[in-house]
Image (cartoon, rainbow, N blue to C red):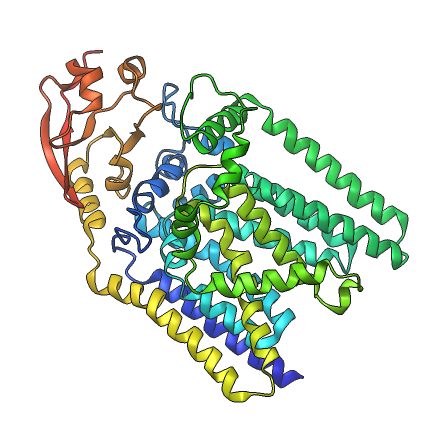
Length: 508
């Protein structure tokens, strides 16, 4: 038994090393563009620095908010469990793209380790190895884990929520840990609401099993009372004005694709559209098949067997382990909430990664177990899975390593040198990505945020990051600010060119 444990630990360490190495390679490299599923990959460039801008401000200027007129400052309200740890990290290790990417890798690495433990407990070393290889080599996981996005960070909290819930099935007191991790997930991103039904289901089963074991009533009362108090505090926070503003914005942005932002109707959920999305071939192709070309089919197999077993009339324990039905419910809940949005973007699909990996490992183990007496067939199944990985994720990653560029890093070096020694404040959309490594402050400007004449007149920006050859939306609104402006640096990325304009000093 001891030798078996040592082998599992050694394999786990190897899998973690591969996971981390692939994600920390070439930290200065640009992300893939386009992605294998045909999407541009723009979210890998702009979303991370945008979500990190408050943490960056605190690390550089000891303030999360550097001007009261700034409209793009609600991530700290919506995602405090992300913003505050990131702010502390950037304060300690320095501000830069590489540091932001490293934070993402470390955070997702914690979740990866917990997934390995769950898989090892269910299927042993083989199942853990299958999960570790499929997720560790996953092309989208590699690049999205290191992009500074909320969703991979959210996944770690989701994994911890499920792990504590699994422990609670054996000892009710672990439910308190599940409750805190669920609250943490919700305070990373509201889309973690898909975990609520799963957590409630785990809570119900945990209390039933504890009752059968004769657990004292005070434990039931303590766990339920703690959950009610934590839930009440969470609801009170979410009803506060700063948070509720983010709820309105995200509802319109996600459910209605930014239509009607000025007058959001939180009750207007297009039910028929949601049902239609479930069978939309193009949506299923871009959002599932091309993102999970290997894991999807194994996961569907495991899901089908699990659902079939759940509806049989024999005791559950004869057919499934706890992880089987929990992973199935987890996957279906995550997929269900994705249907609320018309947007098909990989960063949203990220919430499928943990349960998909578990279900895929389970599917592979199911095939191998069914062929336990046919060694040749087992080797054929493993070989087919390996070839599929090599033909997709490994091939994509090798091509990226061979063809990658470092334009974002190079642009950051140029911009940092251009504003070195100056008290610079930059405004623009891509400015967050191309000036992240500098010591300049910046205000993120895009539709709905910091682009009105009234706001731009108040923001104390000294530089504008302006795209060449395109009518500048900032110049259009405050043209007098550009009188006497001069270009001091240029940035190029993906056939686009920007100029950093230094504005003439304002008369106070």
